[in-house]
Image 1 (cartoon, rainbow, N blue to C red):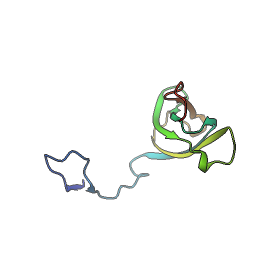
Image 2 (image 1 turned 90 degrees about the horizontal axis):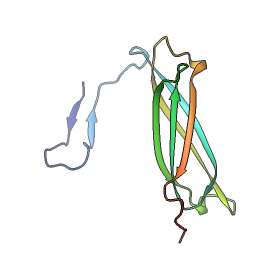
Image 3 (image 1 turned 30 degrees about the horizontal axis):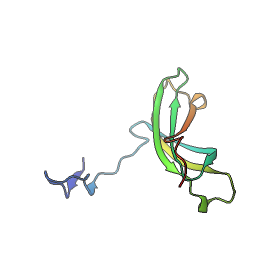
Image 4 (image 1 turned 30 degrees about the vertical axis):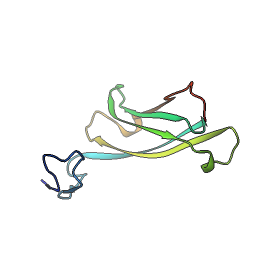
Length: 119
């Protein structure tokens, strides 16, 4: 495996450099799934939590990821609402039980502080 450098017991941050050997993803049975998400009608300058969940055909969770973002008005061309657009890449286990055509992707998004007004 790889060797970790620049770490000490008194360090509060994560290691800055990790030297790892290259891994052949196909050899070790993993697949990559790219998901493009789009959340419309988002209020400007409000924190939004977004979650993306990948299910197999038996409704078991294969992978999930979440993030928090803010849509800034100067990056959008509209007066009322903005849009969140992201591309997320997931590493899925390669087993015979999950057919790629039967994978389901769900997205959920909520404002973190919905009742606070913008200043």
